[in-house]
Image (tube, rainbow, N blue to C red; front, side, top):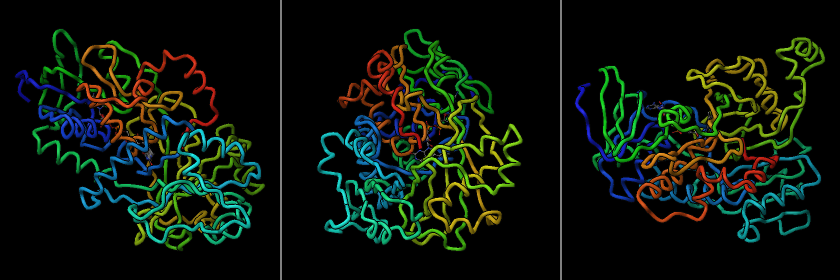
Length: 458
Ligand SMILES: Cc1cc2nc3c(=O)[nH]c(=O)nc-3n(C[C@H](O)[C@H](O)[C@H](O)COP(=O)(O)OP(=O)(O)OC[C@H]3O[C@@H](n4cnc5c(N)ncnc54)[C@H](O)[C@@H]3O)c2cc1C
């Protein structure tokens, strides 16, 4: 790389889905052409490559529902414009519980959907009209909207014959499904490059600001320098490190999470099953002997204790596919970020046992997972309250778009649009303020968010 100083209007640090989406909206909404995205890695190859690529408009707080609803609107626009290049599907999220008392869950749905709740939420009790059914196809354009709360056991068994018979309620979030995040990133990169934007394979080593930003970047060719009017910190798990180069600190932490995927050669899971989540906590059903062995070792004793809810399973690869994906974000302990995630060899067995509680047919794979299975992981980079950080940093001309935790694929469009609007003086939604660093000065909001038992971590 030549040592020549390069001049550019905007430098974005990070070519994950979030940096790319920011560049995309700067390009298509604000006509920006002079954009450089810096990343030492191939685009979309760090956290964005580990994403389960699911989306949902289900959140315990109205702000997050509106933020992801906006993102889904934008993803649908791209799906329409690109003949569904991003493989968007919409079978929904099916949240299953055995609890008989669900008033708290209904209240939370109302909190999340706010003024739209009465229009969106449909309750199906025994003796009701019985109109609920799951969709025949995964087509997002014909899928229903809203939320079905299914309490009629006949309807429930018909729609979810594979579920634990103890399940008494399924809350079916209809505006939810999955996309190919990699395809979305590629689509955006095509537009960015077509307008003159560039991805430069280099790592930001330092940045200073006088009248403009002066960035020192390192690549296999050596060191180079850029001058820029604006910089965007979209460095994913390194968002804190990049902010520190500007002398700023961000309230973020990283949590390692893992998933598995494998070919469902025994057909344990119906291809029509939505993304299914067992909301109830559980103690894994080990045999007495296994339990005793695990309990006597301090490193494994936790596996015999109650585990949180939120274990999930979904068919992967569309109606014609054969693979399934399983995950359980039970790790609640932040730790230092590891670019090569430490995969716990016990995780596949743990997640399989946990998921078999809702879908007993999965037990067929206990101790005999197909040889061709993938076990992968990454980190959720998040704030304690699990809301993102999008907006100006303290340094004039510097912006952050990060802390997108386990929902950065689904919210990248809204995050990128919002960051671009902040940068270019565009119209801001009324929730823009609370999605930025400023919310940490709102003590009442912060107290309410940190006190909330459910932060929407999945
Ligand atoms: C296991 C797992 C499952 C998930 N499932 C889902 C899901 O189902 N749905 C969903 O919406 N989200 C999901 N997520 C979350 C989603 O993947 C992330 O929120 C999203 O990918 C974050 O994107 P990013 O661009 O911020 O970060 P990244 O993809 O990590 O990109 C950041 C980039 O910044 C670059 N960078 C860092 N420092 C520098 C520097 N100094 N100079 C230049 N470049 C730098 C890095 O190399 C990296 O490429 C999941 C995450 C994990 C870990």
